Image 1 (cartoon, helix red, strand yellow):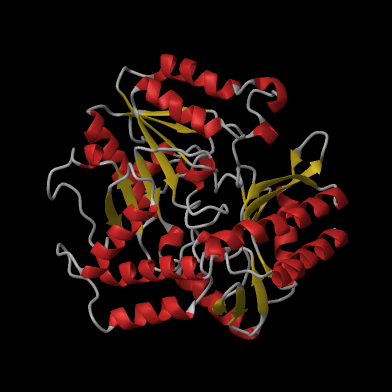
Image 2 (cartoon, rainbow, N blue to C red):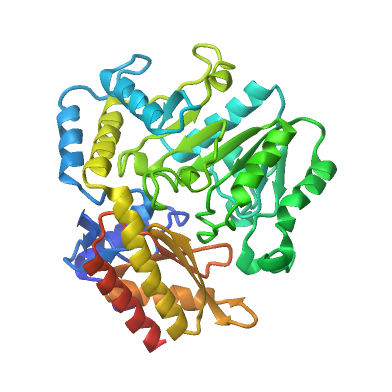
Length: 430
């Protein structure tokens, strides 16, 4: 990685002096401004964005309509805690009209982690029980409730004891099957293994099941087709609440408005975030009336949840997605991107797996395709070199060996061409 510019160096020194080491950044870049799917750093260097500001800016950075909505609202009203506003009520109506018809109540909070925590409380209250099934590799937030359900050791290491009643089960990470089976003849063994997990670990107080349509932090791990619908059926047979964590996967990211549309899922609770505000902090818990009514008035609140500024932003996000047909563009441009990434896999042997849909893909790097040994150091170097060449990307995954490919939904075929060309050039050098 070449030496950062002078202004960047100055800001990084401020960061090192005043911010703790737990603050995360993928490359020594200080963002200055961004527009659409492009970024400029504080020294004026240009980048194509493959991060969406970490899966937030679905409608693109600094969209004029979104910026105007936020500016206009900021001059009217910011946050009347404990009072309804037209913006909050209009957004509630919009979300209920846009989500599956069986979901008819919505509660607003500020972040995805806060929404997951609220969903956990809702599951416990509505069921009268306390155990929740979640999955290896899953990530639902960093506060104690969601962290307890997270299946990533590095997220919760040395923070114990965690919340009791958590039952973690294997997730179908088919490229690295925990049972060392092949998808063609495994008959979704990990799903049937759930019965054994519950038989051994449950104390007889099973309340619900929480799952992501794809595991984001673990490296964009997608389950095989049909798995989620069968998992939903498993929860129904157990008479427990089925919770779908769409904090990352919603608002067009997978080529449909909601990822649940791919298998016509009907969750009891749907959790939304990130793309809902496209840069403004807002998240939501959407559920059936029968579930929400288990809470009495005043039993759950959020200081900045549903504030009119964030709600105005979210309403603008809906308008942009609909007017510019971003869901359809995510599907078509995603297919274009996928084809190009698969060509890179054919060309470069360090790419072990390409997985994803719409405009979210994981590129998993290995030292050897036969052994599938992870190559985290290679990914670190590739990411740094890509950023140096003008492609803003990052790494993630259980082994730290997966490159994130999740550009804003406004990315054009030309920018896809240019960004893939940068990655191809960098991989050729390695």
